[in-house]
Amino acid sequence: MSAHFWNDAEIILYIIIAVLVVDNLWAVYLQIREIIAVHEVDQVPPVISPYLPQDLFNKMRTYKIHKCWFTVINTLLIVVFSGILELFFGFYPWLWDVATKCSLAKWMEHEACVSIFFVLLLSLYITLKACPGMLYEKLFIKALQERKHPPWLRRICREIIDTILAVIFMSLTVVSLVFMVLWLKEYTAVGLYVQSLLLTLLLILLVPFLIDPFVGKRVPLENANLRSDLEHLTDIVDFPMRQVHIIRVNDPNTPSNAFFYGSCCLKRIVIFDTLLLNRGHKDLSTLSPEEVGKGLRDSQVVAVVAHELGHWVHGHFYKAIFMFQFHMILMMCLFHVLFTHGPIYEAVGFEAGLQPIVVGFLIVFGFVLTPYLTMSNFCMLSATRHFEYQADSFAWEMGFSKDLRQALLKLYADNLAFPISDPCYSSWNHTHPTMLDRLNRLEKLQQRLDSNGT
Image (cartoon, rainbow, N blue to C red; front, top):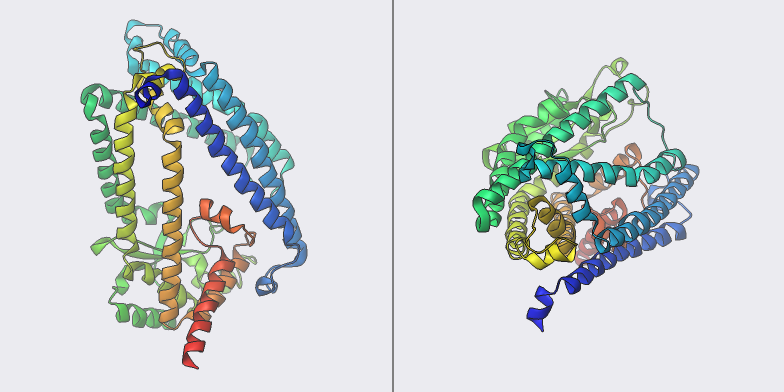
């Protein structure tokens, strides 16, 4: 029975469609839970009421509900319904045939060229399919704060440049994948894993040096008292103060943030200047009226840095790298089993023996591996939220519970986001606990300490 199922293209097709439907219906269910959770709370939570007026909360709530319902409808129509039709009626073999006919010269008949045509046509189709939803979203789902847009000519030029760069990058990626499979054959999965490992190592080496030019400019910390407090804190945990960097961000609308990154001599704690009170300036005349008063007091900044040091002390960077590599090994093992299995290609409509490389990547990673990718994503999100709680606990142990709570509230006031989320939805979609969850956890830690002390 198992051998029959594994080699029956029709059964495999129905399983792929079932996976598509179940996975997206689960996403829709989570969205509906989120809608219910948001709908049931019509008053600002007391802990953030000093920072969030009721009228603004009402606007955010309306926007959130509208956005969630749009996502539900878009998922059901564009992803589920059209996805079923595409799989059942052999859309991908038809598009591959169209791409083959685009070969106007003999050299274009090579699979690498046909693959580029296929991906370009598929991208055009996906864009056209998504257009109604994008137009509706832009015209009818209004953002809470209208941002200033650059002139039309600049926006058009930027879109053209982005499109050209995307086509170049996509073409290079497709060609590299095709030739890798043609050269490595049955060792393709090993080649993909080695490539991902090398890219990971390259990012670990390069990202610390790319933060400054892409995000902003490194500047000295002018506040002597804050520097003294940070030096004292870093000395306690033996973290080099020279690796605490202040970045003056290029975009003043960048959310206030700080993060830990790296390992060994490449480790960094990066603090955006938008996190500092008045962006760290003593002369307020250099700031816009909107920037005056934003940011954290010195003790709150130290509490945030204590949280980031918690990530370092607990080795979260190493754990995340190990977790990702374990995920990649499992995924490549599954890919190795599935990628060359002919009935999978026959299931979506290809003739026996025809197994286009780029389509194989699309079908395996886009449909067949969906259950594994969904569960692995859930596990990794759970781990990252656990890391955040651990880092908060470390800051609490260092005596920064009150300052960290105040910092979270002040950051919320500066970077408003809707505070309510369904726990189940959050566990499947969010890398960080919500601000209210983090405040509740800190409060429980303090209550536990008080009860033990008494």
